[in-house]
Length: 339
Image (cartoon, rainbow, N blue to C red; front, side):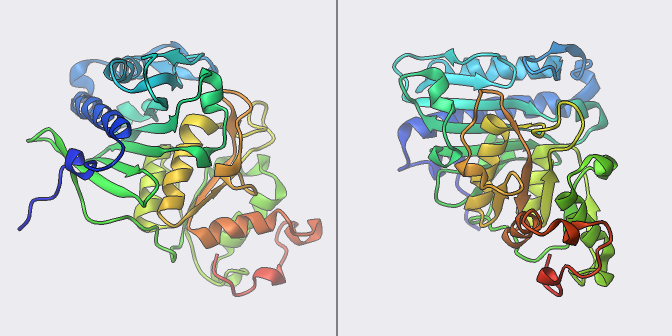
């Protein structure tokens, strides 16, 4: 049996600056994986130490992860570094060619519950100005990846030519490629949304979920299962593996009018990965990779997954108001179509 190639070998022949960043991220991720796997044996890693720049709870491990990634990248080809844990862009190496945006530890509030969490990374070619390097459409990304810390520690990576998966071999301390390019399954009967917020959603989102819940009696003519992990990287990994759709819409609650997920270092890189795996990603209507952030920590609604399901959510936003009323029984545009 041939040994699977290492991450470093996979990156041979690709851009050297991007390869150096990916390998540096992988090295830190392997260290974080070891720390996370020890859980409470390392003390309370989920202990709150304050709030980040946007008011979200910040844990001790959030800060440690941010410092570790910045430290690993500062002597490499990264000119600009933006993190969820920092208010402004940092300059790491004035000779660098890249701009890296990162959510160092997405879902860190789930650590004590032993739920999978992750790291999300977006890589752009650097512009002369730090802010402008990130305030640009996601389609201009040069590469994107996430690392999921779960039963396996895995990295999903794209440099614009599909999505490859790498799994950490703990004995060797290396990421090894697992299989060929990933493709999101087109057929799936799962949707992920926090249904406790139903009363706050806009009518098109309510209508879409109502039709999913109606199962074989509804316009889709099939039954669905609902999933909700409350860990963005874990939700993404499930959809890349099994298909389906994830929805985190805007809603009527104060502070949620423009969604809660960050465009630059959460949604844009995940959208790049999802599209490269054959799926689609929008804010409910507009393609995510065409959106330009208004600020470094801008938030956005996020809908992604199997292409036909994401397109259907967008179509619900264009239906007449009468057709998206609760329990509307026809929605003839969709009758019998896969959802």
